[in-house]
Amino acid sequence: MLDKLKYFVETKAFEMFSFLGERMGIESRRIRTFFIYTSFVTVGSPIIVLIMIAGFWKYLFQLVIGARGKKKIWDS
Image (cartoon, rainbow, N blue to C red):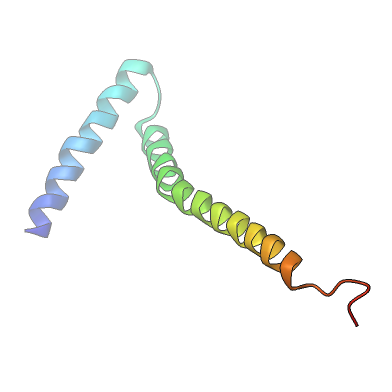
């Protein structure tokens, strides 16, 4: 099953890259590399955004809760 899927992807997807490379005059290796890097970026970017949002909410939560829990100057 996995061998059939691997064969299908290699023949169809890489054939498309070769076709595009020939049409545009670019090496198919460069197109494949670009495709792989863009795949990593599109998969990784939502994770980075989620980490940034979590950090923002944590900071905001500490800011609000911290303001309530801090002792004032006149509280001894």
